Length: 460
Ligand code: AMP
Ligand code: ZN
Image (cartoon, rainbow, N blue to C red; front, side):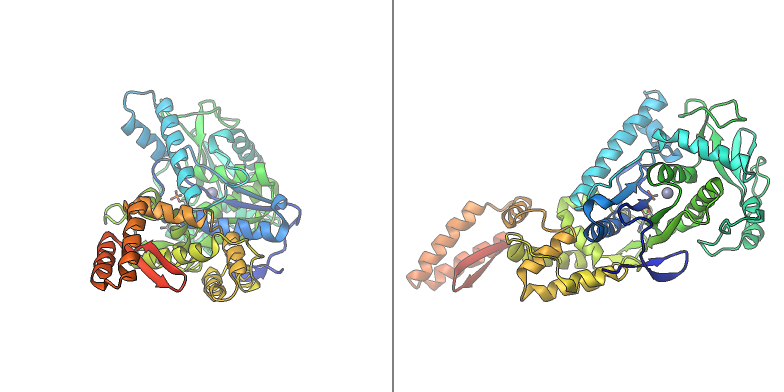
């Protein structure tokens, strides 16, 4: 099976060749835990879960390592903690916020049918590795200490006479343009406007750790160094795939590459850089001020997680998604049907018609079209393919039961009315049988008569 992936760095689809097929390694930037995750955040979770499942399918479950970090040190977390728990010491309040938000995140992504990554490292547990990388960068002349900060110098990187990548190569920006375009940066401790923070002083009461050599006061890490440290610790200096949303290409991923490659004298950090496109809601950018900001948690009240998952996968991961109610309703109908016909059958192998488009840079819309094709003629293949994609985690009865619960419909009452209707039809009292059908319809129940008898379901 040949997998081809689009690489943001080389701007082309390339055959995926792992560094070690017995240990395929992928890192994806995870959430900053300060609030409920929104439906845009669900996109990388679902997309890279599909890739994780596909890699496990190709290389074997034991041979794929997926790392997704949790950023638990950040100004947004500090602000939230101070606001929500004004009576507590800041560090305690921060712990409460990150624990609570981390649990919410897990509940959400479990419901979306996403497997837990092999490792979910937390930034605060990798401060030692961050310090180690920072010290290597200072020793190598790529970073410098100034006023209790440590700054990385992209200009030093690009001046180095070695096999390092160029700063700006991933995001296709030239350093000269960045210098010319940089706003006059007021930070007096920076030598150049393009320098970015690796380490900074903590304000009183904020979380703080012993600083890298040369700084007496305690401090805390910048954002970008976290991912370099966690990827290094769990995947090594050089690994296969690095992913995240398209918004992270610059500066976050550009800076990760710079840090890792300069610290370890490497030409590359990851061999394939993958980025999902952005999600907007009903054709508008999602934002709190527009009032169209939807959390995964809210959506899960109205829709099963697998409906959200299917709805996300109907669009190719690199294209923008327009998230609409209409599309959600269609996804729900499709899954209802698949659950009815496939959830209780023994799965066959995933069908080649589904796997092939996935191997072509995760072409999920085409894989979904193939699922519709299987519906008519290969239910075992449909079931196997749906399971590969992370669907059918419940039985048909559980799925239907949950829908009934959400709708408030009493299944026993429906069965009783159906029996009455069957009896009325038996005595050719069609006025009465129509009355009962209308009554059920008003309750939100759709009935279907066939040779095998009458079945019913809840109207979406
Ligand atoms: P954040 O917590 O904002 O750093 O985002 C966590 C992940 O969600 C990152 O991989 C982002 O690129 C991704 N992300 C954030 N907003 C969106 C969006 N509207 N559409 C798609 N991905 C997003
Ligand atoms: Zn990251």
